[in-house]
Image 1 (tube, one colour):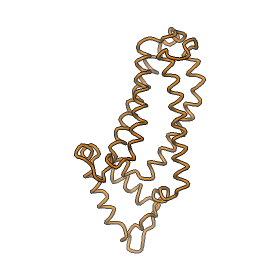
Image 2 (cartoon, rainbow, N blue to C red):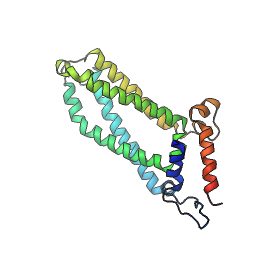
Image 3 (cartoon, rainbow, N blue to C red):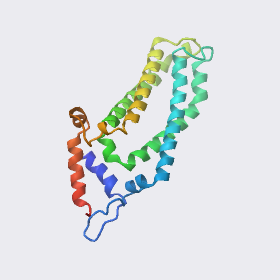
Image 4 (cartoon, rainbow, N blue to C red):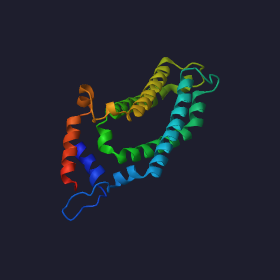
Amino acid sequence: MISEWLAGLQYRLGATIDTAGHIVPDTSWSARLQGSDRLWMLIEGTHVLSLMLFAGTILFVDLRLLGAVLRSVPVSRVAGSLLPWTVAGFLVTVTTGSALFFSDPLEYFHNFAFRLKALFLLGAAVNIFWFHFRVQANRPQWDGAEVPPRAARISAATSLAVWFAVIVAGRYMAYDWVKCMNPGALVSEIAQCSTYDATLAEIDAETAQ
């Protein structure tokens, strides 16, 4: 069902329909976005830069929580001074990332690396909630400590690991072996390539030749 909805988003939304009721190829909004080199490059470049900003601020906060940098500066001061940049980077990253996903949603959804990335993002979200609602509850007691307590360090190390994994998985999304083009058995199973192929066949039947 998700694949069918994404196929409609990619191939039907905004597309031109001919007199026979068929979809005219490359006329949907997704296709136009993907076919616009300048707009695509602008979105992708902005996505990379905003991700660097977001990841960089997260890195500094995590290193402070590990007691590796700025040990004389309270954690709250480090986090507070970087928070506006973190939020800005996050919002722009999500916005541009959503636009990139919209350009080819069906293929991305059935991309092995994308599914790994989504899993790591879920892990990052769980870690954020755990830190803010459990670890940070008694922060006034250790805010100025050169080396925060073990729970804070574990959360920081987890944050570094999962965000690194998110970036690596995102980088690997471009490789053919993680797509449903010519997948191995493992990739085909996890990415549900049989569903991808069936959905494409349905779209082909609706598309003008």
